[in-house]
Length: 432
Figure (tube, rainbow, N blue to C red):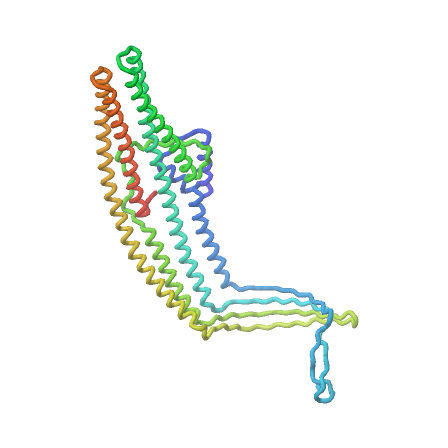
């Protein structure tokens, strides 16, 4: 993992000085390693593993040592019957017990022999680990979906920019020729102004597209964990019906897996509540050394003490608490069953709809490409007729607008197809 991270960092560092072509696969791999949201989701798994190990230590023996120093500024007393010292009955005397200085050290050993709650906790942590892993996979799929979607949006913006740039260059050429005709008084200035209006509209579109392109590039760099100043250049995806559906057979409904893990947790909670009816038993042993001093009488004595024992804890009646917990658990189990049924239906519908949308979008892209081919041919013929003076500028502008609309339609159809494919892959948990 460390070597892989170093390789990505070195690669990202090289991008900051020189832009390199990035295809979708490379973008996804970089996000898989450097995206902070994905890295945090993997840290959640590591945290759960550590929590489980920490909880497992509850079954190991415990050894504790404590020390205490006490100075009795006033030695506490105790009232005792007078006959205890041979006095008359019915009288009492106050007797002080202890010495001014007391040092005490205690070592205690404890070992759990049987505790059903510890076993339940370990089982719950294991299932929670499964939940965390599924959630981590869902985070990965969401981030990869965002990366792929941004990648394809950038592809569309770049293609649209190339269309607009070419249209501006062509419009500049037309305006130049038109201006010559105005100078020769072959046409009026209004004809040239009409083309100028179209040119300004194209310039505005290019400026807007460039701003959107910068925003998408910034987003993509964040998703891939790259430096904001790094330079990137994407390999062209081409506006074709090349499918990104590499593996359509692997179906992983992560939402259902998550509900399945939640159901297992619910079942384990029910077992844990049942086990709470059982007692817990532990063994303990302690050694104590108490050193007493009274400097005034030069009195010093050490007293040892040791004991071993078994401790039993058993709640015989808890006020119906566990009974009501089981009722809640049963209701939650029913709720999860209902969610599983609903989510299964929704996922199947989403997957089927995405499949149909892929077919529709694929057909729409083919139609849009044919429309673009025809619009381009019509525009060239119209431009030729305009240069020959057989048609007006209105006809040329109309053909130009139709060409621009066809270009926009192709880009839109491309995006719809890619989004449909991504929706399908996300629904089956298979964005790689």
